[in-house]
Image (cartoon, rainbow, N blue to C red):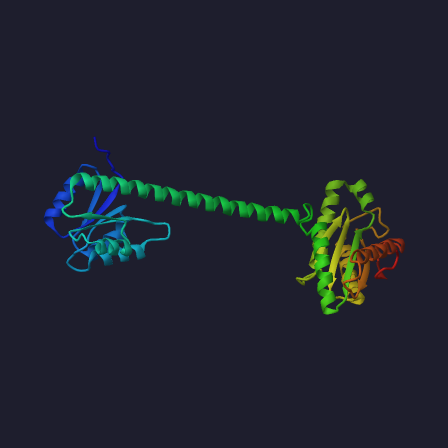
Length: 330
């Protein structure tokens, strides 16, 4: 008993009424959806509209030949689309077969076409069509999975580089960028400054107002700090706890002092209440260190000097900016 292929769409391109009738009878046994074109031009138009699974293509046609039809069909196909093309011809030379394959054919049938051979060829080609489409679907699924994996990796990378509370870069980003910016400024023979910033009396603020208020205070402060570094080469990051840090490339001590004072003034200007501060509002202390870097100088000493300057600012009464040269305070 023959297997039925009701979902199979076959385009028969043939100008002989006798051959059309015979092949129609043969394919009726398979239950296929049959389309018929008697010219090459009509076949190409039907292909555009219907996208058949298999084309049974006579080589000799009233207008353009079957080879040209096959070439145009292949040009119309998308990169993930494939229609099986079986040439039919009375021509039996090896050159004819080779020309058909070169034009885009997949198989070759000699006329007159017999029932058993035709049905076997159609069934075989349909299996290939299904396999090819299954492969395309699998490829699409793999591409989608890869895209989702890439997005997940990008998000993971973003999360790993971002402070979870404030949304600005974290200590890891600071450590990596500082080395790169140090080398860049060393090549250019330009100064580099690091600014350490600390929220004054933050422990007392947390104890009085609660940790949720403390978190909100850090978020607000982070926005102010981040807005102070619009240049792509600069960086504002959360250093840890209530501490923030700036990398200011191609910036001398005076330039860094101006940035730090602007941030300090903006934070106190927010008027976030802190009754445990002598200023009655949340304030910042800032420590700055600057150097003209060279490759043989340790980078971490710049951070240490800025941290020592921050300690000095705290010692001076907080809500202030202090400066130490590279290596000072060790």
